[in-house]
Image (cartoon, rainbow, N blue to C red; front, side):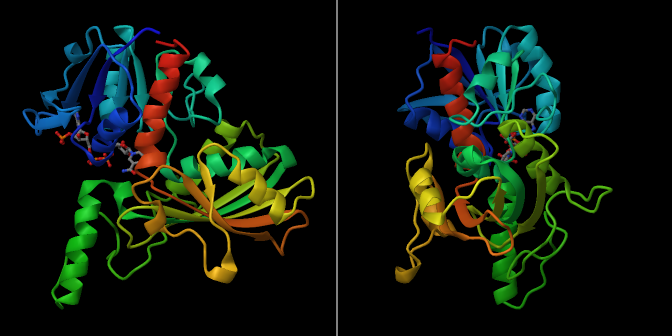
Length: 337
Ligand SMILES: NC(=O)c1ccc[n+]([C@@H]2O[C@H](COP(=O)([O-])OP(=O)(O)OC[C@H]3O[C@@H](n4cnc5c(N)ncnc54)[C@H](OP(=O)(O)O)[C@@H]3O)[C@@H](O)[C@H]2O)c1
């Protein structure tokens, strides 16, 4: 198997740091690796596999001879560098939303729609964090025919980057000390609060985050317009780990026990579901580990063939970095670079 020359773009950010950690954890084999950021963090030192690397400022020439770029540096940075990377024969696996809905760009959850990777033309997109964990749970249940899907998300602040993590900490402290705090990352105070807005509002009254779940789910699972999907996305004062309440209507009848059995055997999913003993997944179970946890699996009372469930995952891992590195691994194994 050919070994690629790899660059991690946005290496000093929340997601970039996880990508670096997971690249080591998954034992990605490479010829060479480099770490890139903006001018602001250039010169920062990063420890990787027992060696110290100096972070470099990303410029077009940084991508000369690079085969695979794992990017988490924001949409405008990806838009600026993706053409430079592709022009030089490289493949970019991008975490931003810049290219996700382009029809020439595969939107991939490793282990769900790997075959879509074969269609790439240099750019591969990583889905939004709230979509990502949902896909690992829904894909194994597709066999029952998904007819309608309603998702409510409870999203951690880490999904909005380092500044948002700091804002939750500082706002909480100020609140407990009775001091004034000016929120910058969120439209409302995040400490001791629940905010029903993530990203900007669209003309249809949904937020952009909610529409990402709707549109990306359709693209990844190859569902047509006849499948009705709705989402409400909410920011909660949790540092890390997204939770989702999911209601699914199926074409075929399915029991909670069947769903439990299928999910327990599915790639990337772990079932914790024993309500009698108060066993169900919470964000604290999910933070820092790889599985998407599913629980509270029950018959939905509003739909004919309906199932309701709760799923929780580390948004920085499955929602961004873990999937990026898993895609990188697939691209190497499938020799797509
Ligand atoms: N956080 C999540 O859960 C999550 C999930 C899915 C997708 N994403 C996406 O991943 C991206 C990064 O998110 P994050 O939370 O890691 O943000 P972050 O903590 O703010 O990190 C941003 C990174 O991008 C670098 N960067 C910014 N502008 C750059 C430029 N012009 N050239 C080169 N590098 C530049 C920064 O370098 P400096 O240190 O030099 O500023 C830093 O390394 C965003 O597109 C975000 O939407 C995040």
